Image (cartoon, rainbow, N blue to C red; front, side, top):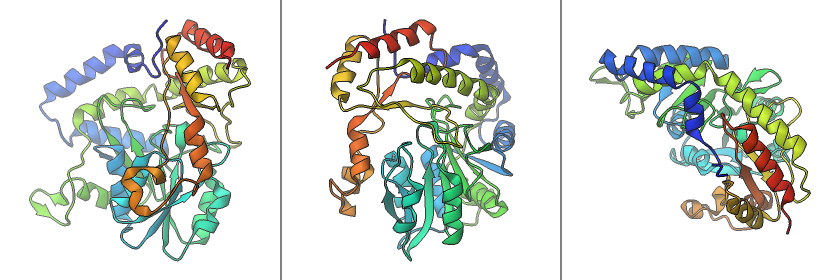
Length: 365
């Protein structure tokens, strides 16, 4: 048996006819940039998240750096972010010239809200909340800290499409929510795509101008903007996929429940779900001190796995200029050495799940 870590074709095949019909509809329309599909998707996504506004952009990274640009956060400013985040989260901060201040993760693999206050300085302007692996952070504590310290809150929801904190969908708590629709995401496009969500009318208006060369009216440029537009084809396909997002998340929940109940190998530490949160299970991440051995064993059994992520941002060559060294963030470093993502995707068969569970339970050192 050969099982991929993530099989995108399986999800496509679940509703292939609808995707193909929508693609032809857009192609035949003759309108491919900032048209009715983008407008409709922005409204539908805003309604789904529970916010007033959604602005489509070209990618999740664009959503992040544009968010901080619109909040006027840049040189001389600090932004708090979890130390085990994907490096794109940090890039969203540093592209604008701001400095990331890392806070260690908790037992749920997300930022430890109890450690945020001690990281705040007179230069801190925002908290970047990364809902990693599809699980919500403790938004009660984070929003309370932000309020007391007059900080902006940006949510990175790239891996958390539709999951909630105490019944409220992530991406609706902070000043701005940032979403990636990269194909592997819960509501993935068929190429690069992203969006910004907000309840702030000023952010909505400024984002629409900024994404389109800083132009509100053609050839009349208000600001030095960028070219970051969600295209019509991706928007149309995302509209189809959004109809099934809740069922996609429910299916992944069922797979996760099987893993949690039936994987009993003591060499693995299984993921925990934070009380008050649910998980969309973008990744099913286990921890093990025998990662290399387990990954090699599973590979030989035809089971693909991934590591999210092997190098913490502060140890990346790209951020050597920050002057951080190994040992500065020991929890993030430990996680980077022991996390392993098991296969998790829509359309996974019972036989594949059985094989994965059986193989892991048989693993020995």
